[in-house]
Amino acid sequence: MKKLEVAEEKGLQDVLVFQISDDESVAAYSLEEAKSWYMNEYGISEDELYSDDDIEIVPMDKKVRRGEDEEGLISVQEIVNTYWEGTPFIATTTLC
Image (cartoon, rainbow, N blue to C red; front, side):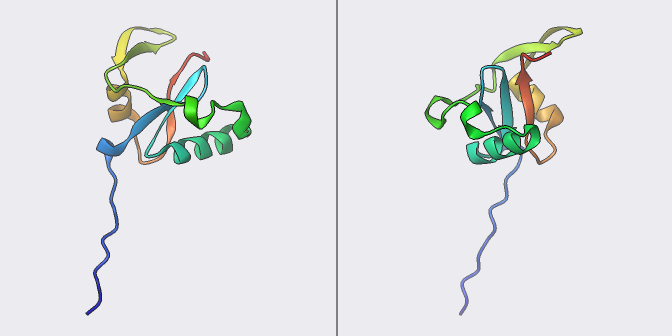
């Protein structure tokens, strides 16, 4: 009898936020996915990012400024819950 293989499904609860540079963090399922997306999206090389040993996972309860023109703070979890559409994105940035 054949063994049934079950594909791993990932959802919102599996998203992590990786601080990949001084200025930006990326929401993704894995560090590899975050780095690959960021390098492709912005046309940069891996040596322009933090080394893997220096990349940290941003705590979901960390509060950051809502935006350049918005007052108040928002948690990283709220950002992920609001903007995650199944693909990596910039979760936090200081480049405004």
